[in-house]
Image 1: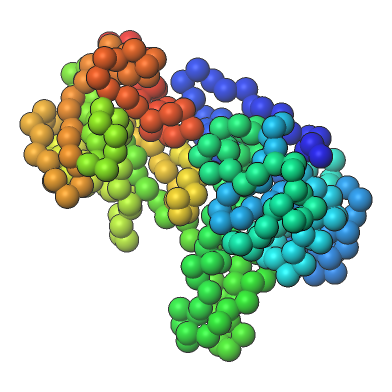
Image 2: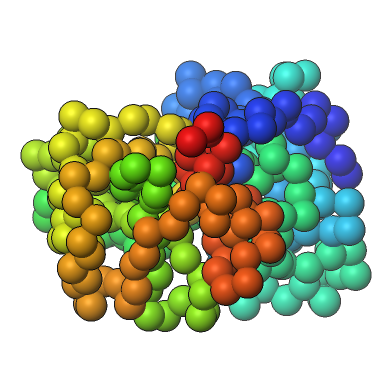
Length: 318
């Protein structure tokens, strides 16, 4: 079954519009007013036009044409499986995500032979931008529920409410909402050069923007400047920060906020617990890396916001 109302968005060359960012394109009206209407939700899951996509262990079920879609028969796969109401498409069809058990056996089920569960990063590269957003959102929510099954206030077991968008403790009544962690991901730039770095666990030659979590009491600009100084000894004024774009990133559930900051020094002092290497490169070198023609260095693929931050800077005039 194909999702009838999905189409790829128009992508600008420099990708500075967050709505065009990979994993960010949202095809649905989230229709949050339906989340508390249990009778409506139950009826919606039985409608002929309902659309289900399948997840297992954070991975989507895909076929050759893209994300695999099912109708109301999807719930027969695993009647007790958790589900999410994702919203309504442009035709008004309700859209749900179904989270199958970790050991669900595809070969003995209704979906035998039609597809497979694909590793997330590989799978989203083979489906539409709109579908990738749905899969990314579902991954974040399902993994949050899996890791936050107990009340932070009293320790009781929580229940999933509001169609998967909240949990609530039946013992003390405390409400818990899905977390989204803000992350600054940034380029420091100075005199026609930008700073890139790599962690020790990354493949040789693979370089990216520096990044770090925003701490309590910080702005995202302050977090970017702090991380640059802590990891590489580069001093930047938070006031120099230029916003590029942001991207939801479901590992586990972050909002990557892309920035470019003006550096005050070139001297690098590495925190070896964070970075194995950092270096300054020119715009010409950045363009070579982005095009895959650099003899030594690689950059993140176009699915990652780091690619588009580097591209935004590299395509500017010197």
